[in-house]
Length: 340
Image (cartoon, rainbow, N blue to C red; front, side, top):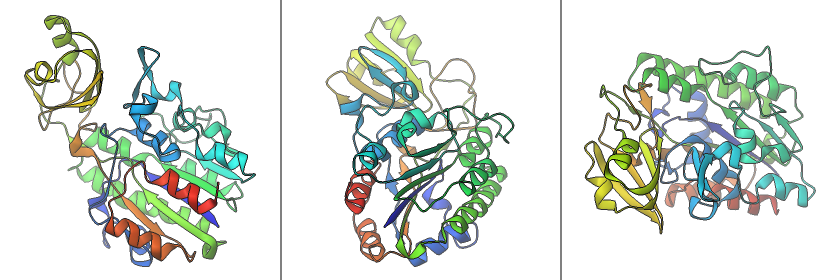
């Protein structure tokens, strides 16, 4: 069996349709999908969810709350912290299985612990010189396809990642014509990846997912929760993470909720609160830096499709059609499929 995990960063489940995404739609028809999408971790951002995809372990255990992690009493970048748990790549090594990883965001290499895969691109966790990049400096989809075509994808476990939808959403927002075009463009690129997977298709389980969706940022000023923390003397540390904020320390849920522009707050563990702003707003200082962003519960829906030629696919499709999967679903499922 070959298991392929393909991630289209920020692709909303509602974007999948016969007209806009014929390649994705064909996988829905030949396999199945989660009808209302899968569900991200409570903070709907890229890095923590990608770590969870390959560990199956949530932030209460790892400290990877969002794009920031709480480790050893301080905040650090999640991509610097690493997955902080055993990954599917580690399990492949232990079981003498071969894994191949090709990622359209070079920071995902350390985030996911992908440096432990048998073969990984980008090999150093940095964008290689001379390749096409998107507007945010991440490898363009075309570079990912070129890299994937250079590998032997007849591996036990393959991870493929396309990043362009996320960048387009940040730049233009979810309701823009630019994103509508990006959906079509990304589906075409996804189709090229499918072509690379055609050999051994009958032995393949293909899991096609996204990590979150995005929401429009329309308000001219950010909600500055860090400033509120300073002014009100909270005994806490605050990180802004798009349309989420992570608060660690001794402060009440009610105090955070009372800040102007905060819509909701949840208690995540004994020392951590997660907040989100009113629709159209994001956390930060001054003017918003993006027309689209993510982090809030509004962005938790994920695309989730299972397809492929392996005999296990129909039952897997029935499972995700009947029980909503989440970011924590895939690692134990893949571990079970591969027996690792």
